[in-house]
Length: 148
Image 1 (spheres, helix red, strand yellow):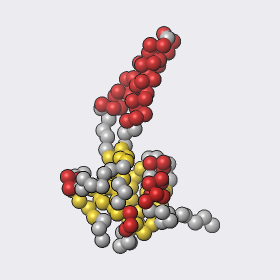
Image 2: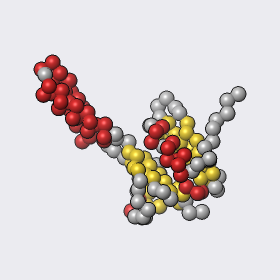
Image 3: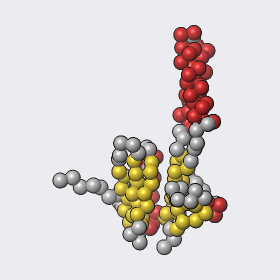
Image 4: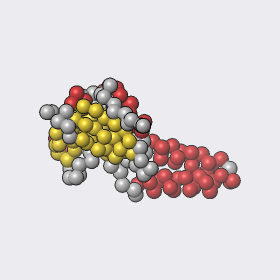
């Protein structure tokens, strides 16, 4: 089996990472800063809202911690939820037996079953960052929950 746990410094440089999913939504925070500046200079009525948007977004960008959740390549996914923060799990697309997305109120989970019947659990916060890549690279392996 090619899927394994490795040190992050040993991640192969090829194939290139197609998409990287992180905890902090950097694009949205940058957009909020831009909108905040537009509100700040547009009129006196919206200046305070602009200052609040700029300060909250800047605080989130600079102070709050960020972490990688998962990286996608065309051959494998790299999962960063190992107990040792210097390690990650390489999961090859052809070694996935099934996958299932489970919704919870506080966070969502992606359950990935490998061909050796081990299960990897990836905590995530947004369905649209996981499902399209698994449907593209592990098609027909989605496990759906049966309701009676």
